[in-house]
Image 1: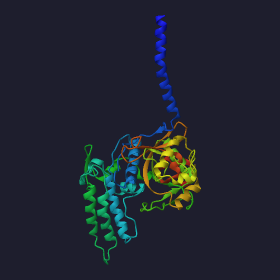
Image 2: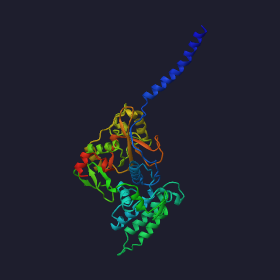
Image 3: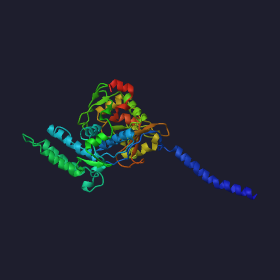
Image 4: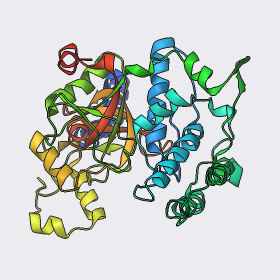
Length: 402
């Protein structure tokens, strides 16, 4: 009898615990928060922080080349973003002056700008120049004062009424660049060896001719190259124009074969959150229980975010089309906002596939600086992307003559 009482008491003690576990399991099952399973993940270097600088194009593309080096040699490098900025902003100022002011001068840029600097000026490791921000008492990049000083200087030269322009203006601009970014070294020592920026770039083992840019629009013929018409594409490099389904295939093929993708696109969308998630919600006609279109359009951005979060991974996505991409590009709703690095594929509990994307905002959000962006979002909101030509499927390479 004693044993029976003890057994019964034990059962009674277990019931609340079992009930709690069941409730927790129920909550987990019914939660709309995404639970990701990695399908494919490519090794990358650490997450960086561009801070108060419009240099996502720089951080994302150097991350891309760091991943390329890692794939080829297994070596991890931290390449210097401020070296690229120093060289690139001088070149951009020269173009504005040459055009007598009829060109944009801004913090932004493209993936090609980084490739151009690597090809023509070389590169150095992070440690060969002052750490970002340290020259003006900060711990990270902060271009607010820098551009407030530099932009009027460049504008003044570009709009000069002089009949003959004195080239001394470049010396003044170089002084501003060096004061805020640091001087680009002519020679430095790395791991016991002495390099120039050009010899260091050559030592990385990459073929700079291996890299191509891909896009998808109908205002140019498919399988031809054209400069995407956005202001920060100021060097005017060409991107190969593919049908939308083939553009998407290139990204998938790259990840499947161990290559990363330097993606540039639009993140100024309700479906792109600051917590690390991006889904292609239909913000014009959302499938939200109890909300009609008129009510939805009156909501504040915060209210919209809350409603979307309630639906979580169960919300329906729009499927991008060639027509929708072109319409948004032409009416300015597909904008050139941000550069990031695609390095993997994951699935959530509903089976929806996402690209794993490295951002350059430090270890922010719910995933320490990593974003999970649905395939629909990436394809719909892509302006263009850079990839190793060997990552392009063979049948597409044949069509492009690569």
